[in-house]
Amino acid sequence: MSMEFIEALGEIEREKGISKDILIDAIEAALISSYKRNFNTAQNVRVDVNRFTGVIKVYARKTVVDEVLDSRMEISLEAAREINPHYQLNDIADIEVTPRDFGRIAAQTAKQVVTQRIREAERGLIYNAFIDKEEDIVNGIVQRQDTRNLFVDLGKVEAVLPLTELMPTDKFKHGDRVKSYITKVENTTKGPQIIMSRTHPGLLKRLFELEVPEIYDGVVEIRSVAREAGFRSKIAVHSRNNEVDPVGSCVGPKGMRVQTIVNELKGEKIDIVRWSENIDEYVANALSPSKVLEVMVFEQEKMARVIVPDYQLSLAIGIKGQNARLAAKLTGWKIDIKSETQAEQEFGRPKSPEGDTMHQDSVSID
Image 1 (cartoon, rainbow, N blue to C red):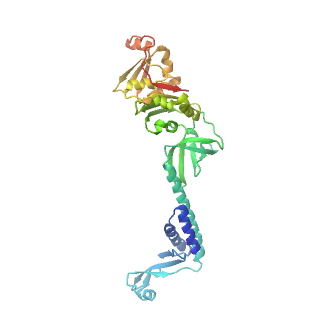
Image 2: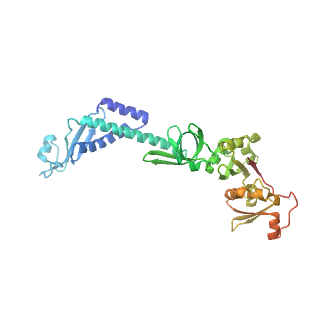
Image 3: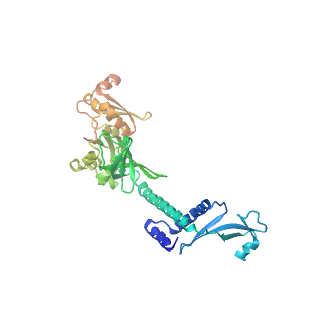
């Protein structure tokens, strides 16, 4: 090697942030293995790369002894003092054994080490950049697809979007832009692996944080999210400021904020409900858009029995039970829905006058 190589290492240090000393230490370690492999020796050696000139020297390390039994590992005191008069018994003597053609091997080895270290450093930088984006939204461009995954270009790295994490309404082709939620960032032997999703409830939460300034500022909180991706979602919100309407903030002027999210999710219906510490009120809100007459709470079973008008029963339950299922996920409570007639027959509850319903604070966006 030469001074030019040392200067090149300095340039790499400035551009890639990899210490020149670390690179030289790695080159020295690799050259020890190369020397033993190429010259078929098992002796203990040390390689020294001059930090200024790039000159490489190989030294055999031998123990100073009275009587030499293994010439590969030992040297007599007399021979050692010919090299350096200060050597004593049991010292380790360094004897230069640099082969004549070692420069060619050294250059090839150094190139491999530097290339590998640069690759590792770049992988580390990518990993550090994306580990902070775990559980966040990123934009990418679809590159290709196999039988199980979409591969999405995020600029510095290619991320994986499993087909099982796509919404039923998602149709992407090469070159399409896609907004996804990062569920996992792993540092593997092949480099950083980034796994994304379009079905995760976190995607809906992050979209609202991006679109609603009150959520971003912390005035409005998202307390819970329940989602059946591509079909319907429910989101429970709460305001820390009594003068700020959490539901209205999420809907936005003329519904523009929530409509932007609906468009991004390819028409997924979104129910925005007001969170309440009173479970009966919260459950009634969660069953939006149906009207609720009464909620009976059973604390021990963590179950709520809900009574709705006869004509609202199918709406409260939803198609294939979807509305009730999402309300249960949102609140964390089991929900048993009964019509007025069913309640009267099973529990003897009298029917309410027409229009007598519990107050509900929610909005449903199709």
